[in-house]
Image 1 (spheres, one colour):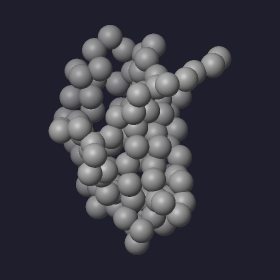
Image 2 (spheres, one colour):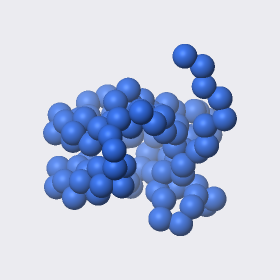
Image 3 (cartoon, one colour):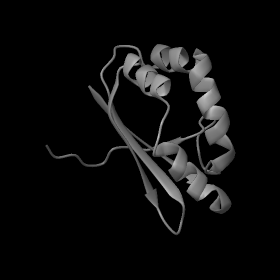
Image 4 (tube, helix red, strand yellow):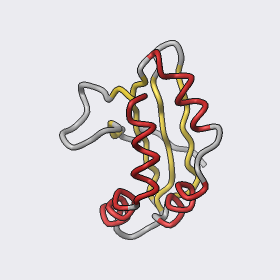
Length: 109
């Protein structure tokens, strides 16, 4: 199992839309998340900075393949199409990233 952490900005005028969307995530999207070996997934919002922090556990053997599977799913693509306009990626993210990856510097069970 690998713990993952990511950060992303939200456009100020879209914060309430994003919160509303995530209060009722589409069941097909949740099924795909699970099918891609992701468990214990949470997204937190820090206001007033409007930063999202996501964390999850990856329980698979090929993260890139599972993320490609998710990205190829038509229903997930529809979900992203309504979420992406709310988002504002960080200027400092790595090339190819939307959500900026974070390094784990501490963990305690």
